[in-house]
Length: 414
Image (cartoon, rainbow, N blue to C red):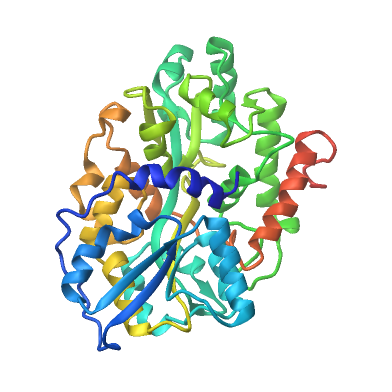
């Protein structure tokens, strides 16, 4: 199940929890004059998510009408490509995933917002700007980010005699998996063999500051020892029988997580909202979160998985569109409210000043899990996983991971 499919499946369930109340804080930056009676057409895969700041926007820009067009993410990307090919039919503002923004920017349909966005650079997580930049120009404005940590089942680890705070390296994590399997029968983590989607592999690359390419855009994966380390970690888990052969984002995967058949989930901040709202609603008090294990003691314990941005198209009323983007994404109060009600971790640093950051979460046994993810977000390594060719690279790599998992190739060959 690809990132866009995941969002189509689960985002509506989360953002439906949102509300427009208590969001009366004005945007910190006033927009210059724009065309009168402007109508902005906004393409998004979830209207409710983007309407969070509309009440504030309407007070300051009563002459701008917002026309939301809801599309499944796959349809949104296809329509952007068709509009680029025909030269007409583009929206004014479009929601894009980090994994797709460079691909769409390469089509030549997005406005260069470098001069507008530059003053905000220090206000957002540094790693986000890299995803929004193509050939030195900024084409997207940061929204959410996916800092990764380790979710764990308290009851399973306790029964196996494993202290979650001892899982400081991946080697210790694998070793704990054998103890957990013997004591409880639960798998350490689910990683399918024949249907592996490469998502965890990419997380492991990111953690090491690696990716498919380097900063200059040259493919480096085949020569990078960090990629080999990521594959060997997976191979070790499969060899020792601690990684369940269950494809992600399917019914068996959901059931395993909900019924305690899997002990840990090395996943992004957005997974917490999924667990509580629909994936494991009966798991209150059973889950906790610790930092991601490192490859070596003292090494990076952070990574990223996913994220999204807003982009302005070349045919838009740029001033009106920029006012809309700023109101939603550069307003700490708005972003804090989105975070609180949806679970999408904001990349706007000031929004972390919200009390939600340190609030005890009853579902997670009273732990303030957002503080763990905030620490992880600050330490996300610079990595080049997403690019204009990401979709092709991910597809090719998935096939090789699967061959390796099934014993048809060595890690080096893959």
